[in-house]
Image (cartoon, rainbow, N blue to C red; front, top):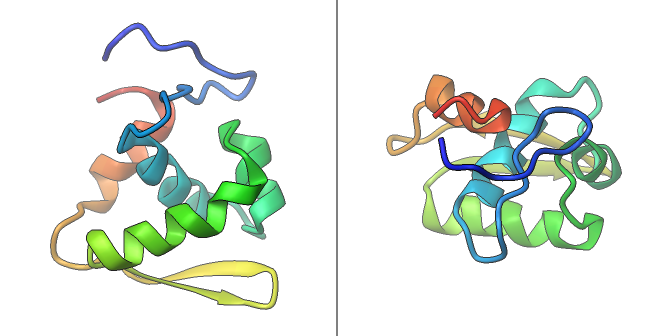
Length: 95
């Protein structure tokens, strides 16, 4: 892994425009018990206001299906492109 700064939860802080931001968003949604924009942002260090944008990009560009029920996100499908174990590694910086 590159020498990215990490936050207090051990999550790498990917620069603006980096695909890692999408992947940590998805990994956080999968990891958290109650994945809301606020809890995903708190874990990842991403802006709460950008979480919906990242989810939309994941759905439209990566072929996944993440739905929002009230304030909570849920992954319905990882699609055919992304591998769950690989995406989850991005959250810990171990790729």
